Image 1 (tube, rainbow, N blue to C red):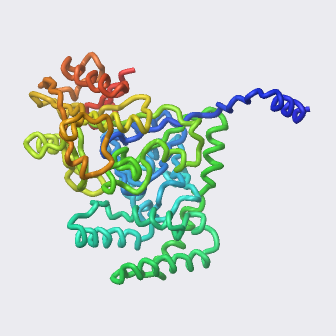
Image 2: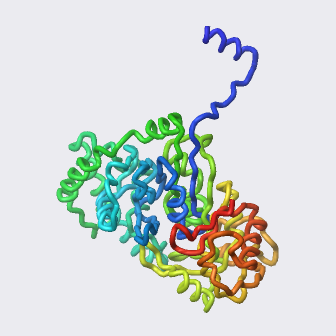
Image 3: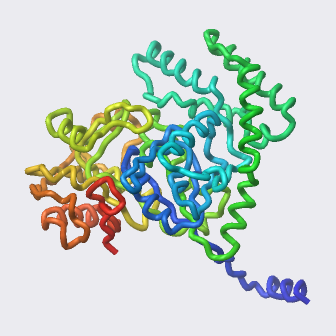
Amino acid sequence: LCIIYYINKRSSGVKRPRNDTGNKLTVVLGAQWGDEGKGKVVDLLATESDIICRCQGGNNAGHTVVVDGKEYDFHLLPSGIINSKALSVIGNGVVIHLPGLFEEAEKNEKKGLKDWEKRLIISDRAHIVFDFHQAVDGLQEVQRQAQEGKNIGTTKKGIGPTYSSKASRTGLRICDLLADFKDFSMRFKNLAQQYQAMFPTLEVDVDGQLKKLKEYAERIRPMVRDGVYFMYDAINGPPKKILVEGANAALLDIDFGTYPFVTSSNCTVGGVCTGLGIPPLNIGDVYGVVKAYTTRVGIGAFPTEQLNEVGELLQTRGHEVGVTTGRKRRCGWLDLVILRYANMINGFTAFALTKLDILDVMDEIKVGVSYKLNGKKIPYFPANMDVLQKVEVEYEKLPGWKSDSSACRKWEDLPVKAQNYIRFVEIHVGVPIKWVGVGKARESMIQMF
């Protein structure tokens, strides 16, 4: 009967409705060059979430979360791992350095993290970062410096070389590690030899690494699942709050970032679907995290950079040093061209504006509102780095509020000029601001609606 009904429906030309059921994923993404304070926003949402996922990147990300006065640093583990009632997922789009994973867990265990291995799910389709990938990352940087006089400024965590192995179909995945170890060992040796042929100075202790990998295989075996089925089950099962923690940021995206000074994965919203194996239909709210000014690590074009006292003040007051690299971050004024561009790609539901308190001491605050190229305004964000270096930024000047905002806990508590700054950003980008951060702790995030 069902089949006859279905055929009749089809022949009568009635379009079947799309299956719009299932749990929606809330996504948190960086909207600048990273280091916007995504960890804090994720932490805020993770307290109410049942599942927290990472979908791309590796331990090149760095999220700091402060809970009860303790500072936790996460690189590969989703920062929601702190929530003892939730599951944390490392999706297929993430590249995993196993020694790094356990080292990170042990450091955080000393600070009070408990039973993390009972709450962690690892996709069997995730690719593995080997020690030689990390060595190659460093060698490639030296090579770039010698050939071009500049490098990319990678974290040397082996992320790029691992994604290269993945794209050239020579990579090895978690499912391979847990299958026939003899076959895995052979493929591991072949991959190591390929890199040694390209980099004659590369030394690989094949037997030593395989011995360690065999041990790691048994340690992670209880955590590994078929990621696609796990996510399908989570989405289509009982009501659940599912959160996705983006790593890196829009301007570091392999396709949309300031190429070649980018990371090697898609850190925009498309990476959520491919990095977890879920349909676009199940993506719900997408929150962009934005610093109240702009920073970037490493080299590459940075139109609103301030190589002066302003930049130094932002660097010092904001403690702008990378969590993963320990490098000083370059600092400049807020750039709304970047935010509009990030919004074109991600379609943000709302922004979280962080580190507003760093601007407390400024007499005057500038905001980059548009770019000019050869004297003409351009409505797009240039793809070519040489072109981006040449843009002239048009600024709007806003008066500073010259008062301490760090104790503010409600919108009404904020100085009027700080409120005006927030509204200015909302109006010019066309995205509402849902949270405003005025300090490091959880309580320092003011929720607006």
